[in-house]
Image (cartoon, rainbow, N blue to C red):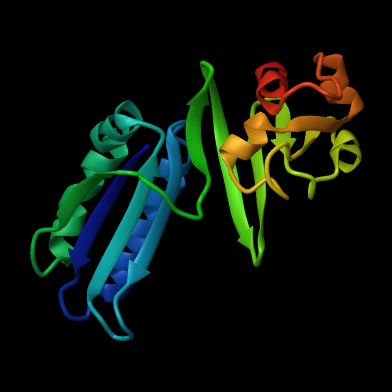
Length: 195
């Protein structure tokens, strides 16, 4: 996953116009298949400095965004609103509370890991459905036609991370997951290959 951190310093009185211009790009960026997040932050109250955090599935997705016609057309407009040229830092994503796009056994998935006090809510989302810790209800997701399997831990008291999820054992699979071949007792990794 690739991250861009872009810093803008608005000319005095141009703060709102700059914010509006950046937010207009968000609509087009959201339509790009490799775009994961696009977050605009402003420095302390009254600051003329804005920080844009953009996350893309990979370098190709980021480069597609940077070369896009709509972005290239917007850059001259930004120059009129800025007190100095914008700066851009490219980073490799390492960790965080946001969903992560990964490849597991050749399959593109999105990992969600949400801390909930002493436990984590952990699930992997695919195009067909999800593989999740015990806090997710596969029967409820069946009502929406989503394949879902719940995994119980095989090491430790709970599913705390991706490794635990993959090593765990399927405890429950809804009808949509069973149709894909997911069975109670298989490992999380085996189930993920099918979902």
